[in-house]
Image (cartoon, rainbow, N blue to C red; front, top):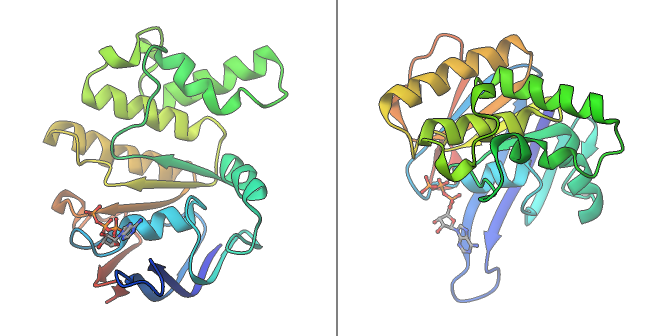
Length: 222
Ligand SMILES: Nc1ncnc2c1ncn2[C@@H]1O[C@H](COP(=O)(O)OP(=O)(O)OP(=O)(O)O)[C@@H](O)[C@H]1O
């Protein structure tokens, strides 16, 4: 479902500060699997997730997602592809201040031509799955850290994507909220989402529902 072949990411290529962040990555991820990518700070985890999300171009190599080689897609097609297929949960939540929870979650739907009832249904369903419906009218700047994350999870789910990517999802959470996030991963699995989490948090070690742990060291899969 996600097939990565001979993937390289070289920052500042042919310059004095050239740096290889991903060095010949090959990876096959099946539909509905839960994958944890582990590695020290600077090992290349975020770079790999950003490339899978189409947020950043590889230097070379192929990333086939549902029969589409996103390494070769023009930028405009990549954003449409990302909007429909991928939900991204950012470490620092990336919510829009001044708007409430409901408005933040509906943001990805705004440009879609769907009727108001369907629109409200999709937002409400995402809020329910993420357990944040009770805060739908609260401005996001007044949410707690855990609630901000649940709002960003609802936003990631609102388009009903088949793939969920999470970059260091527990970096800004206390232990209790980190464990709530881990429980949320089980829910994603029940919903048959393909989930890839990049983390160096040992709370993610030895989880029985995780299909595969991938360790990255110095830009390579170990
Ligand atoms: N735009 C850039 N230009 C140059 N080097 C970069 C750029 N982005 C990332 N890097 C370098 O690539 C390496 C991998 O970065 P990346 O963010 O993927 O690591 P990471 O494993 O996610 O680390 P962390 O856990 O700290 O987020 C790092 O050494 C980083 O400094």
